[in-house]
Amino acid sequence: MYRKKAFLFVTWSLLWVIVPSPMADTLHTVVVANTSDWQTGTSFSKDLSRIKELANAISRHTQLTLKLYEISGNHLTRNKVTSTLEKLSVESNDVVIFHYAGHGGRASNKSSPWPSMDIDGGPLDLDKVRITLENKKPRFLIILADTCNKFDDSLSPVWSRGGSSSRGTPSSESYRQLFLNYRGHVFAFGAKPGQSSWGNSEHGGFFTEAFLNSLNKDLASANPNWHTILKRAEAPIEINNTVQNPQSKVNIQPAKEGVVQPTEDACYYFYKPGGVLCCRSSSGTTCEQSKITEEECPAGGWFMKPGGVLCCRRPTGITCR
Image 1 (cartoon, one colour):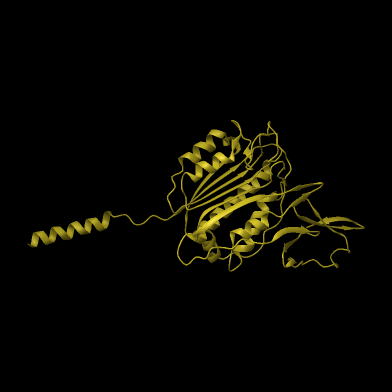
Image 2: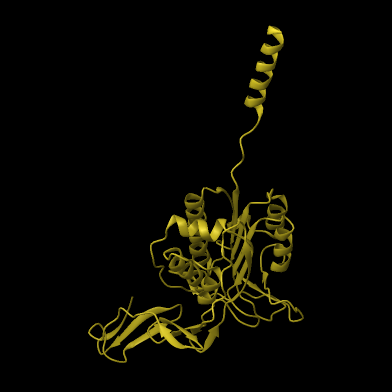
């Protein structure tokens, strides 16, 4: 009897030792950027750096284990991107983020609004990226692409891009609300079909900057909302005599009991002169309070350069923030 009890004790002890502890959920982040391009590589590098910073912040605030996959420079090929995506080992409660900063376009006979990446080895349709990642069945999937979406069978690159500054002090609770409480997907792209996506070496992509600004604003609020984040990021961007209209699609559901389904934002967002973001709805138009005073610039002197860079025209010349 004593030996039997001892044997059982040892057996249960061994079971206790060998049973693995629960694995932490994972944040898979794939960042793809054409950083070696001689014309716009510095712009794409800016986007790459900011998305990597975002991934690290999400991991830090949510305790998701970060697995970062960077494909850039001379390593950026069609085969490298497709093989990286196909090899991802994704569990049912994981989060996947994919971001592309680089040249792109679309074939003239394409019906989907999604663009294609123009990379070494041939164009890679972002529809294929979406299908590959959806088949991995993550809890939450985010796909962002700051790239042109022009009707051009040759996918010739367009080489000017831009941005502005971020705002707000994010909270860990807001990170958890956005990245742990929902299942579904968020898809967003820099331009609608037929348009270019613009930027510059100082600020990176106009759309990437707009998305991060909007995300940071909600991360500093008590009730962050994916619908609002993407609607604000869709505000039309005026570039000289053209307009860039980002596009997005949000389809999310609560991932746990007690989480409220977020409501869709009824605003139409736009920038008025001076770079002030406004919301137009059925109840009227409201704008963010401008911190600019006429003492800083003569009346009528404020104007916005491509990318939301605020400038003042004075008799002595033009200065920009």
